Each structure stands twice: as structure tokens, then as C-alpha cells.
Image 1 (cartoon, rainbow, N blue to C red):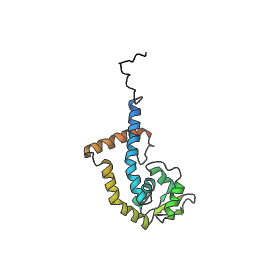
Image 2 (image 1 turned 90 degrees about the vertical axis):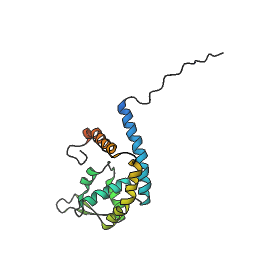
Image 3 (image 1 turned 120 degrees about the horizontal axis):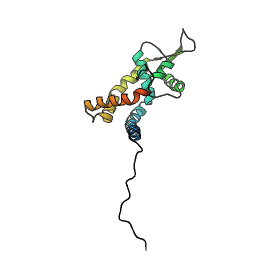
Image 4 (image 1 turned 90 degrees about the horizontal axis):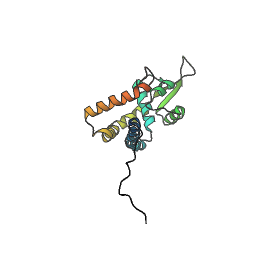
Length: 163
């Protein structure tokens, strides 16, 4: 006959450190919040990365932007920006041209169709962001912005757009 123990086992630690807990919480939060945007952008046949690129181009309109500069300003790294530009150009959302000053540089500009897509996304995207984070008070949002900046700051290139 086997004796059963009435003492409970110690609770298993879920995280090795507070840093790991924060990192995994950020990852989980990103996954939960991104699902809202994935659903929205799928309705417009764009990705979040493509939307971000178009938004950056719109901010510099009417100027064209060197592709290398765009890459540095994206929210997340785009492993194949050439293919992303190809897809958006085929849809008529942007144009590419060679720089007159440096023939190696590719200049990218948003088209009227790209601007129209961004305009069409304004309302649905505001609703999406409200579903994502509208439950937080303005002071909580400002605190979260500051904490995320502090966590990211040592890992950003000096003078970069996210510094």
C-alpha cells in the first residue's frame, strides 16, 4: 500500500526573473493587440508593416524618401523591404524612382491611391486602437508610453526616430 502525502508541492515559478516576466508580458500583450490590427488590415489587403510604410510616406509627401531611410523609420524591421515595396507598387499605392544625385538610391513616394487607402483606414483604425487600449485612462497611457520608451531607449540607435 502506498502512502499519499497530504503536503502540497511548492508552486512552480512561472518566471526566472522580473525581466523575463516583463518581456513575456510584452510579447503576450503584443500578440493580443496585434490580432485586432491583423483582422482590420486583412479587410484592406495590407499588413501592419505596409500600412506603417505608407503612413511614413504620407508624412513626407510630396517629397520622395530614400528606401534606406524608410527602413530605419519602420516600427519593426522589414527583412525584405524590396518585396514589400514591389507589392505596394503593383497595387499603385507607391512609386519608386532612382535618385538623380545617387543612382544607387531608390526614392519612394506615396501615390494618390495610397493616400486614399490611408484616408479610408482613419476611422476603422481609430476604432481598432480604441478596442485595443481604450480601457486605459489617459494617465495610464502616458505612463505606459514613458515606461516603454525607457525600456527601449538603451537599444535604439542614437539620434534615431525612436530615440
